[in-house]
Figure 1 (cartoon, rainbow, N blue to C red):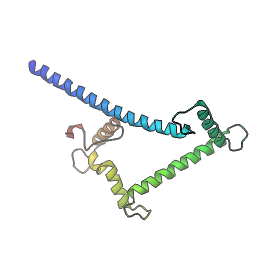
Figure 2 (cartoon, helix red, strand yellow):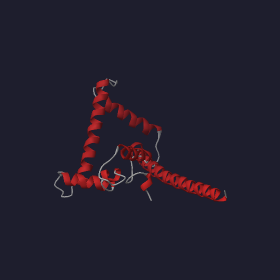
Figure 3 (cartoon, rainbow, N blue to C red):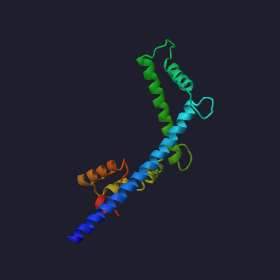
Figure 4 (tube, helix red, strand yellow):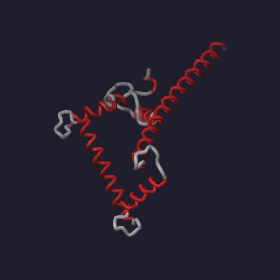
Length: 170
């Protein structure tokens, strides 16, 4: 019985330490995100650069945004104007993403991506071959169970997963 209590205490201690580590990591990420959010906020709204944002500065930015949406200047934003604005923003995000993808993967700098460059970039981004990571038993094929296990674990980690199932982790 004492051995079981000892193991239970050990498990509780491991769980507690793990929870603290996860919470500390999450707080650090939130802190970094909060700092980046603050920087974007002041870049966007602090028009005079004095380190403070007034209601007048917020109102001016909002009026500017409305003016950009109201393409025909009639004081109203129609569905067509809103759609055009959203499409333009989407196209800009796509262009930025494509540019970043090519910059990261284009090993020879020719502005084009070969299949090899794409595969190398993918493996670098995922830290190895994804198929091999899902194939928990290493038999060269992925069973439904291996796939479901990998998907569940990836979802639990916000899109990140390790080779094989939980039984293969150190």
